[in-house]
Amino acid sequence: MAIAATAKLQEQFDAGLETRADFTIDQPRERYGAVDHAVWDQLYRRQMALLEGRACEAFIEGAKRIGLNVAHVPDFEAVSERLMAATGWRIVAVPGLVPDRIFFEHLANRRFPVTWWMRRPDQLDYLQEPDCFHDLFGHVPLLTDPVFADAIHAYGRAALAVEERALPLLARLYWYTVEFGLMRDARAETGVKIYGAGIVSSKGESLYSVESAAPNRLAFDLDRVLRTRYRIDTFQKTYFVIDSFAQLFDALGAGIAARLGDPAPLIAVEPHAAGDVLASDTVYTRGTREGWLADGDV
Image (cartoon, rainbow, N blue to C red; front, side, top):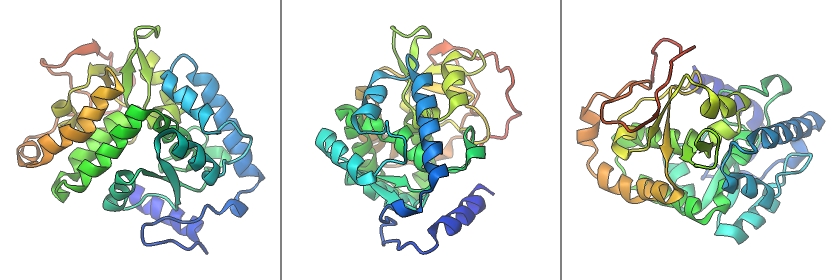
């Protein structure tokens, strides 16, 4: 159902747009109306206030550095110029989700695909598919950090060499790090800070991920993450906590190459449920599980 819904939305937004073979388009700035700009402004101001003290400093500084603090949907070219000067990355406009291999090729060439269209005012707090705010605000600020930027580049290059049957494993790794990752920070009241795009772009999950007693917070371990299913229909049951972006770089590059050169052993093993806590885990917070939905993990 999610794929069908996304396809319908993309058909609506794509009408009249020329899409290239690599699924990129020219950002259709003329299509943004007053409502789109107002939604961006509201979401940006709300999230930046909410993330102060909760998100890692590299994210906060990156958002300011690339010029997202504007009262309108940002100009992708202007963002790209600032990003290119910082780490050699740029952003490219796309209609929405792109095929896996195309996505990996963009990352391997230091290009980050950003969906061009904005969510509606009634979708401020939840949207099933990624829009401009999720992609641009959630993902791009950290690409100003050299180590994080190199980690995403390494992920794209390593992913291109992986067999198609290993794609679910790649998705789990991306989900639990780039989308919903936390980082240890002794200066934070909770001991962790946010860096994942799916968290920083969500009001509810920004609070839940670092302050709720319900979820597990476990030390990141590559094999553990590759063998763990995730939820797409609720806040996360488990967050994996990295020590640094250097650790992330090792996992997204050399880690993938070493563990997924032959994915058969990992594929053959039944994955853990999203809320499982194992005897081998390093547990920072064992969740109370309060409010959790019944298991229905993907």
